[in-house]
Length: 367
Length: 270
Image (cartoon, rainbow over all chains, first blue to last red; front, top):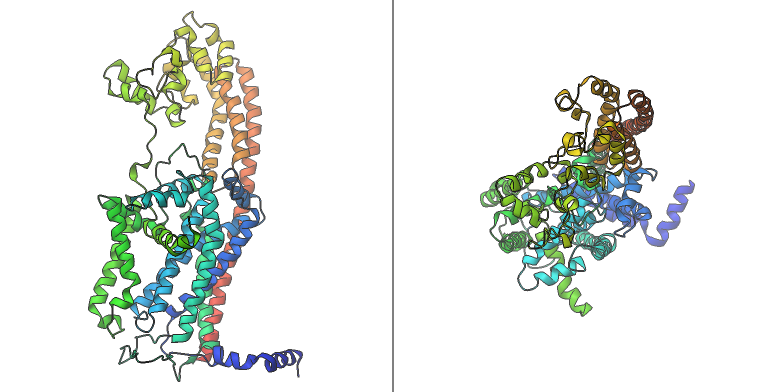
């Protein structure tokens, strides 16, 4: 018996490792018609882990002080060995996290995987989406550049349009009347600790819900693609005769992750500046407003929506209504059909919504 | 504020709000403070209003140097804007112009006063504004030395010789400036190189008022040496970038190869 087998045997008799592997890996069966979109969640876990690792590395040299933050980031980019790579991975990674999260949500939408009994999976995912946007927004301020300073100034200003509590919220977010050192302090705390810990907790909940409900069956390639779940008692959706998670789907996950890395590293090494306008490398100057400030691409639709309505409050209200609708979708859409081509109303709304989002994004970019 | 209440109510509200509102960056975000000088002169017709547009298009406006920085006065108080008690200086007399401009351009003023141009001040010689303009001041380049400008007072031949001696330096400075601008927009720390260029450019600009051809040639050679050093630095940056790109090709290729291997391995289990 080899040494490894001896070690494995020693562990197995104590904690039942073999049983665990059988239950969670080799014996964990997935639908035979599972597709590549199911690996978006695994990619997101990898991205989040990479963000945590690169974020911790940046923390070694980053100084969360309004007088030193910009210079510390410049130092990281220019003098710290591989600092440029770590910072670019972190900045590009945050954009990628939003992009892949959108793909993940879209795949869940189109495959009807949000339907009962997966309301909590959807809700926890929706909360994660908002948390990822919040972690991106708070991280945006940290380099203390012209772009980050003014983008945060206007972003926090918008909150003032909320009736009654608006003014309080603006001051609460900024830590004062204006964006300043206090804002940097609280955004830093939110970005490096509060939001990441919350994300980790919600990811845990999301995976727990997945583990308890089982993986949903894709509606494609089936004669009957209706949701067969009934609300009489708890049922785990098992897939007898399905493919094992390990090694089969784990290898699919690895393939998707490797393809993602090729794309991600391509951007990091060859086109990182698509995410960095020139103002991102000019130190914050509260007395000089840059000519053109545009938010990150994933906020462009929100930005344009606020602009097209006569009042900011109306713009906020419309966005709030749209987000609430999206959050409550599993409770609104109670139909049993999961195949997108058999859900014409859903298809019209979903494609219309996507086109509207893209149009607003492009309009926002060129406005 | 009660922390428990904050966590139960305030925190979710703030997060949701943060995510819902995010950005509303008004188009007119870039509103420079409109001084009372510009408000008043901008609405005037004739000589009073004629200064506004040339200033707006000048290097002074570009660098944030406004009316009060040269003419004094109070730019926030319309009633006392031109009150001498608030430091208003008005328009300088011809002989005062070099001192007027020289409050900021100290070295240039000294060079000018030592030059043939400066020595002729008050005796028909040119002042700063004769060549550079008053409100329409542009970034000083060699183009200022041209037959049309110089022939207003004397023949162009000697000026042309001086210009030829400085043209090579000028071209190098422009190229380096452009490159520095690009690097700055890409997060490269340009502070030290910017300072070196600033120093070289200042030395070069001080030659503008020198009429000794031999001195101009010798000084230009020294400036070129300094510029060479900056350009060697650029070479190092480019070389480093080349290495990064090679690493990038390896990283992307490695990822794609790994993807292919995982895919093929998965196929063996189908």
